Amino acid sequence: MMPRINIVIPVKSFQLAKSRLSPVLTSLSRQRLMQNLFLNNLLFLQKHFPLCHLLVVTPDKVAAQWSRERDVTVLLEDQCDGLNAAIEKATRWSVERNFDTQVVFFADIARPQPCDLNQLLSRAGPSNCLLAVPAMDGGTNVLLSTPPSITPAIFGENSYRRLQVHAEKHHIEFNGLNLPSLALDVDRPSDLSVVRADQVWEVAS
Image (cartoon, rainbow, N blue to C red):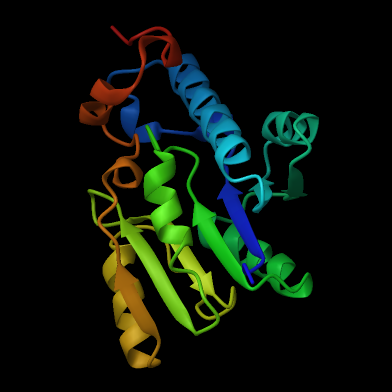
């Protein structure tokens, strides 16, 4: 029987997104870029993975409204306490509703492909495990956890290695998956080469 999977999409405030792109994009461009990436990924997940539940966790009221308009569940944060705190809240939500597996999927992944995410989800099973897709900068772009609470939220700088260390310390099965379309997010100016022209407005002068 297929496990019950909750895909968590954490989204920070659009107005605060992508500060590392400020040397090349205006504030409005960064906001529009993140909005478009978020919507593209939300629609991608709905279209290709309809049997998975989607949960958007965000303090951004626009992201929350767009999600609800598409019948996606929203966990609205009263304030932004950081990425790991947001994912901890989502994990508690998953546990309380008896999901077998949780997948954290970041909204700034540039061009996800169904075959790559299918490969990750096909590895979900009844045993205690972590499956991680490393980002190019040493972070983690996608993390599958069975059960959802098997690890605390460990995201941010060098998170992929820190997850490995945590798994080794606590005798948790850990597997890293090389899934190219899920490895590339949009964080640095060099990443913009994979973004469509209609996703960016106003290049900074």
